[in-house]
Length: 555
Image (cartoon, rainbow, N blue to C red; front, side):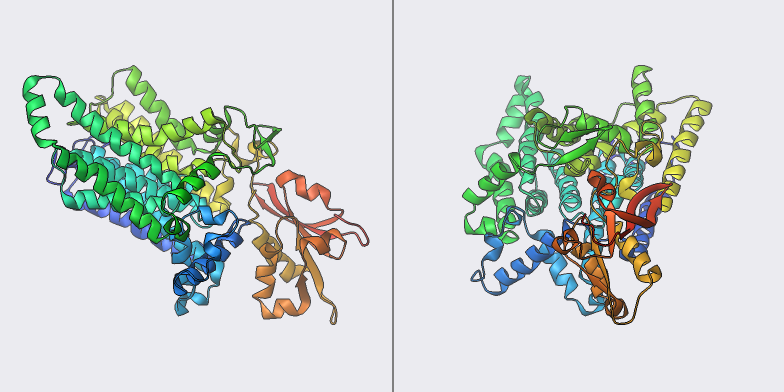
């Protein structure tokens, strides 16, 4: 049963099984996004910068130079590796940083705000996608589940590659599902929205080309079943004339590709060769390093086949594991309430969007590292499908007591996860669930935690406040990751820069350092000789060590 917008009516898949007033169905999503936006505005300055952001910051300036010089300053098309990424996020971040009201926060803090807005956009598209599949309740459930997925929420602030890509990707999936609903006669407005959504995904990362395959699949699974009998064949073939197919398979890709080039100078210079070069580069990315995975050290070029499944199992919140169990039991016991109309086709598309890319990554044995950040884009579609299935299972439960028990269990799981996220703040990225991983204490020593160095901010703030200083000599501070991760906070504070000096990695290795901040990646804290002055901890697990280096010794 569909409304004018092609979405299931609110009572169709309400996971309480009760019809809600229209004002409540409209008001709860608005409340969720208002609260989420308020939280971001209140906390975005709490998050530390990471070692990946400096390259993005430089790329943003290179892009601005390229546009302002009309391509004469072409470093953006020649810069090592970053040129293979679209410039959508970086150019927006650069413009926002130059905005006078936001300049007072600092360039990296402004970047975090921009990145968080993309994160909200991903949650919004998950809401729209869930609503399209099974009504407002399922959409709200999807949005709430994704919001309270700590690994997604934590990455919203500093991960300028994977979170914007995830947001645009689920937006593209939603646009393709909406297009499929209008087949065989798709309006130009729907085609334009699909082209824009796919184009903006490509403007973040070339991996968005997968959405073209999803578009083909969307048409195929809609048209092919309609060709089984003569009457349907006549109707479909009359509508799907070559001109109609050209609208879908020419206009949408052309618009998407053009939009991608607008935000990606490297592609604009050579619209075919350079994107293909980027695809080839990412498919054979050569970063090599050691990873702590399930208690053993593995090579990033030879990660085990279970790398992604295990990371998902330990990093997804407990309530999602409970939801998955409920869905499986519902399917086994026949409590799955069939979705209205042809929603199964949309659900299949969303499942393919969420499952096929990581499966291809595993089959191709692609380079993986830093947890699941490279497959974060799969979380919004997968969590949306899970929310829709959960809504259907609970709606299909006839007895009130089991239904209440399920809702209470999931509700408690949501509450516990929310409390954990508050206690971890601002390090939600180091969340591990209790059921599989044993929480952060159980995962520590078996999996990498703060591999990005975001805890350096809290560490250097402690140094500036507590380390004694001597007039006439500045305390030399370094870290085991990248010098700007500590230098940024020292240099932005005039009083601190009078008494403290940030030193480079080379200076630190020569022993020209007094205080070293070390994260636990590669056991960095064990390689620094000296006395531990302070630990940045969550749940009793150290994330960053502040170490007074022994005089005359190197690290």
